[in-house]
Image (cartoon, rainbow, N blue to C red; front, side, top):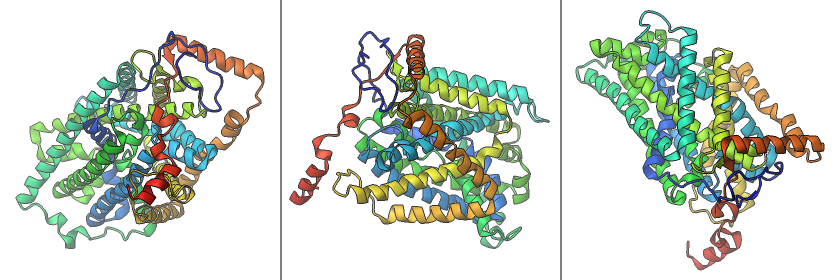
Length: 513
């Protein structure tokens, strides 16, 4: 097609190149700082302002709720260590999807891609966007819930604006991520500082062990599992840097460094934020609040209480930008593998941004926002998230067995993925027992991708009219969006000789690594 790239495996023939023979590729513009802000910015979105209520409700006590938050960060750290190994061993953008496709084959990878594109990321984006609009409009409607149409229109405007930013420039999108990540840390820092001031004044009775572990109701193991699912929504996004590996500068060094810096920092901030909440609010007050941070601000900040909804809105604004940036790369990677229309694997010939993939993510998010209430889907999203994590980390163990001599720049101790998978199995097992309908719907959503895979991807002898239509649509899309297939990164297309199993064996024998 004139772009110097191979067409996606199994995909339809590409249309003519609209770039006049220009060779373009994804730009490596994500350094260590931007890598950290992508992880932190994706994790810290709306979750810390939504999930404390759910975690406390299911855990039954303040003390156990804090334990769940700390352990949730620990589990995310174990998972991120496994993803660091996978990210430098299989240096492709696309995260879970790319790793599972490489290890287990097309069908399993497509099911992860299908559930993520269909429900997981659009729903999460919709929840964050609606949280943004609710907090922005809260000062305008102080005595009532903001109108339905106002929240939807503001959410849609925000998503459209950030989609344009991401289409226009990778550098601008990452700068927005940097700025708003600092802003959201400052907002949480304000909550933490105010809470610590309360503790120093002696307002910590609710945090003493004898009071903190007073259970309003004795939680079952299934309820504790649901508390972890609620916390996992707040921690979701810890693996998102793996979705943009090909745009990271020196990924073998910066990918693991960013993970090791970001996850402990977020866990520390989350734990202190919850301590601040509980230092100033009783469990009953927190459970009755629809906006925990706003209630916190009204109690302690007085005339400055409007700072809190504005701060939360800024936090969620950065979260929307981060999710758009990374989830669009998932569509891009899926199209490059031939699992989605090939147009989604193209990038703009000047800005080098995946415009078609960004527009698909934007459209899916707006559709879900218009369907109705999205908060009921949080448990579905958390369940599918954990299912994806477990399958991916199980793939790490299988890949170790399948290709033991493959050079791995990072190689975690086997106890790390084993401990994660044990926790994963227990969590999903008890969640399935406690909420069979929620978990069952999550499984059904994922399994609906099976017939789609066999009809759309595996069936290679389609009628010629279908291929003609796809080729025409691809050609039209290229003309409208000025996009071309990117040049394949040499690291992705053909790993260097030093990464081969034969060379790895030679290095091991000579003691060079």
